[in-house]
Image (tube, rainbow, N blue to C red; front, side, top):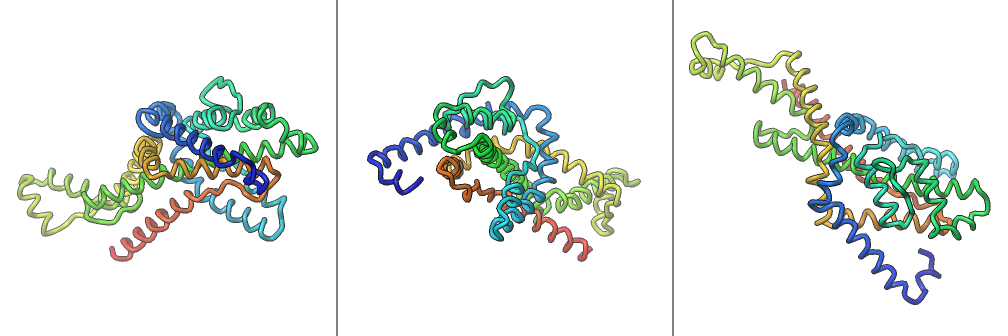
Length: 314
């Protein structure tokens, strides 16, 4: 908001109305049963997109950092180009949420033919929205208006992209909990969990197949432990990653209500709306900050450190 807008009578009431609207949106889509309805879209190809997004997320973080550095070095065109790159695969859940944000929060008319608009369709819908007609005309040229709409659509895309990072974070917490209970070990990721699972499978198989019976087998392998083969560890990693992809696709069913109760969804949507306000006021220096991906990368680093330490100890 500009200082002039802040001084207008009724500004406080408009801010309160906006926050109330965001609160209603969060309640409708991120608490049960709203989040269950939202995640119906995940039944299908999203299960395959989720692990791909896990792999692409570090690339997104690097590109965002480089884009930010370019802007700090006054390489504005390069920085803007990098910050507009859409790295993550667009999930059906994200597409459905984008359509809801456009129509329910930002007053952009959009008739969904499928689960949600494509990025180009989103920008076109913004350009044709009556609410923003005067602001769009004030851009001075068709190219400037199109660039503004593209940035606004990118902000929404970045917002929904945070769900991938939160899904990673939730999956890591689940693996951490399972590892602590089942193996009494720190397992912040599927890779660090795999050796423990493979060892348990190898031990159980060896005890079951012991020639003198499983009772004596348990005693024997308690004294002479059997280790998993490299092939078994690799197979375990692949199976756990497949399970993790399913968990990540539906992690929001648990993560959404928790974030709603903690006020995280509300604050994130306020940040998104502030980015839109800045764009409409001609300020291009306030892109939507993607913070959650950095948190997910901390778990990746932790998982790598735990795995390396386990290899050296082994």
